[in-house]
Image (tube, rainbow, N blue to C red; front, side, top):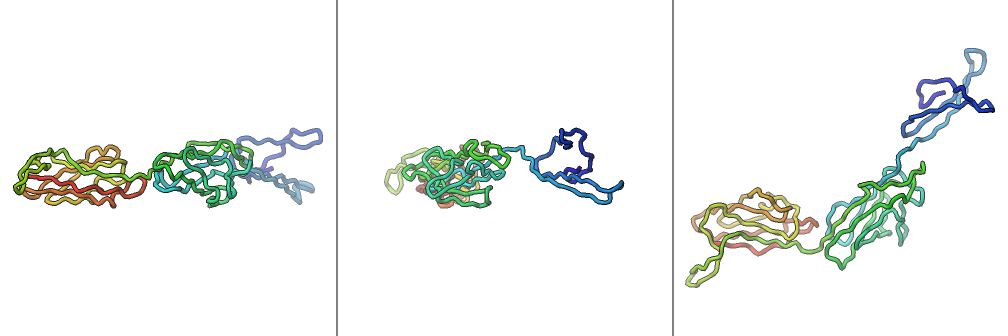
Length: 290
C-alpha cells in the first residue's frame, strides 16, 4: 500500500468478518491524496503485480470571501464592488443574481442596494463584480457591505464563514468641498489714495503665516498644495505642522520687497477631495505687508 507515492507499507492486520483489511491514516494535510494497493501473483518473488488506486480530497477549512470597492469614498451614484472567494462555494445556491434579485450572499446596510443586472463573473465560482447603487437624493452618508453568514457551502460541506475582510464600509459625499485662505493678520484703518479703508496689514516679519482650510479632508500633501499656490511679492514655505487630518495647511510668508501687497491664490482644480473631485476655489487672499 502507498499513500501519495510515499514508501509502501503492508496491509493492516485488523480485518472485518469477511477478511477485508482495515488501514487508518491520520494527520493528512489538506489537498489531493491518492492510495495505491498492489498485489502480486506467482511464487515469490511475484511475477505479476496488479494495483488499484483511489483518490480523494482532504478539506478542513471553511470557505471565506472578501468584499471591497476601489476606494472607501465616492461622489458617484454607484460603485463597483469586488467579491473574492477563497474557494468555490456552490452549495445552497452560491453567489448568484438574476435580472431582479441577488442571492443573500451580499447585503447592503444603508441608503443603497445591489444592482443584480450588473453582476459579472470574473473568475468562475471565485471572483465576481457587482454594482451598488446609492440613493440619489442623499448628499452624504455611508453604506456597510456585508457578506451573509453561512449562505453557501463548499464541496466538503463546510458552511461559509464571515471574516473581517467580509465587511466593507463605503462613504459617499456629493457636497462641494469648499476652501478658504486666511491668516491671523489684524484689520487696520488706513488712508489709501485719500480714502479710509479697512485692510489687513502687518509689518511684523516674525512667523507670518497664511492658512488654507477645507470643509472636508483632501487627498493632497502639503507640498502638493504648495505647488498649486501662487503669491505675489512673497515666497511661501510649509510650516510642517499638523494638518488636522488634511483639513488645514499652514505656510510661512517671506516678502520679497520692503513694502508689498501680497495676494495668495490657489488653483482648486489641483486639490482633490477624498471623494476624488476637485475642490471649489476660494477668492484670493490679499494683505498689506511692510
